[in-house]
Image (cartoon, rainbow, N blue to C red):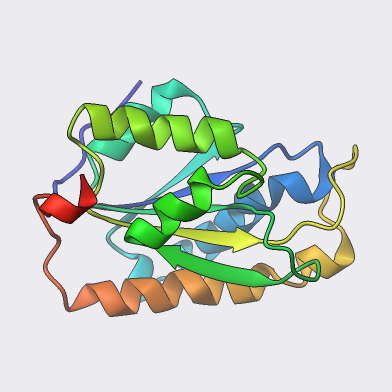
Length: 177
């Protein structure tokens, strides 16, 4: 069941398939963020953490209800396994539109396009991409990619710190449409 969120809410969405090794890294990072939130990390106090699994159009509601969106996912960065990169706003959109941009490229890009068609795309958004090593069957990330979990968490916290002192944007600028 979808919940209505405060219009100032930041939604952090971890996506991935946890039975395909590094493909589930977004979910593994989200689990670490849940631990930090439960421990009282002040930057995570007012955020909504959500396991997006392998993506579904059911996520349109929570995404459109959020003022800010951070997606954590395995991403083809053409870098060494475990490299973490942050893409914000239009840079995120461009990354997802490129062939091979995200392991979920079609699904995530389509999901954001649907929110755009509804004129409800969160105006502040970011993709925290982690370069996978293996997308084979496996119930945990490879050691190299697992070692990137703290860096991915720090990337999320850095974004939240940057956004903390900025009011959430309530309308897309004409350039974002």
